[in-house]
Amino acid sequence: MNSDKAIDTNPPDFQGEKGQRVAIRRDSLKIDPASDGSARVNVMFCGGFHSSMLGTKASFLAKFCKARQWSYTRFDYRGHGESEGSTHDLTLKDWLEDTLDVLDTLDGPVLLVGSSMGGWLATLAALRRPEKVTGLLLLAAAPDFLQELIAPRLGPTETWDLQQDKVVLLENAYADPHPITQALLDSGRDLALLDTPSLPDQPGLADLSCPVRLLHGTHDTDVPYELSVRLMGAIQHDDARLTLLHRADHRLSDERSLRMLAAELMDLAG
Image (cartoon, rainbow, N blue to C red):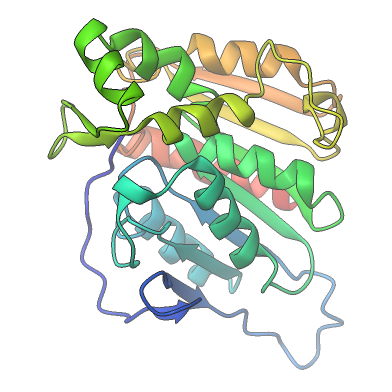
């Protein structure tokens, strides 16, 4: 669930306590003095599992937003990219906390773009900050992937090791094996969105109050597009649309996919 890395010479800022700081890159909106500010657009990008804010899609969005003088924010979850911390010690709850902490630093309404695991986290963030998030663009969304995709890959030995608080290294097609812990799997269960009644203190998909656009490739071998279909089916907001890109893979970083990403973002920006 990683993205290709692109070169970016803009150094990040850091937020949080030393040893657990989150790396953030912000491109601020340049407001025309003659404007009343009504065209203000803020875009925030949430990356995937073990990906970074230097990936192809994140960098494409930086150029896209800059060309339109939109504010753009991207960041790395703790244990990812340039942020501090170790993934062995972190869970989805921590990465949701990172997402909300960055979101809370932004002024005005925000369009959230989430890729893969970032689609799960962006949706959770929109449910928790309905007054701030005015649109969701989900790219190869991977809601509940820990239970839906990771847990079924674990054999008896790996399951036993997790129960003994050991770290299991899961092979993947992109980089070094991903460390999986029982705490990580448990956090995914606690934040599940699909086929799961919402807990009394947590909002569910029925509470989603902003427009949603989903893009998914039919040749995605990492996160089946059926997860986006199920997510779309559970969203009750009238302004929601799922587009399947024929033969596109999980990265959605080819030229055609990036054009569609741009078009959907323009649509949400109004």
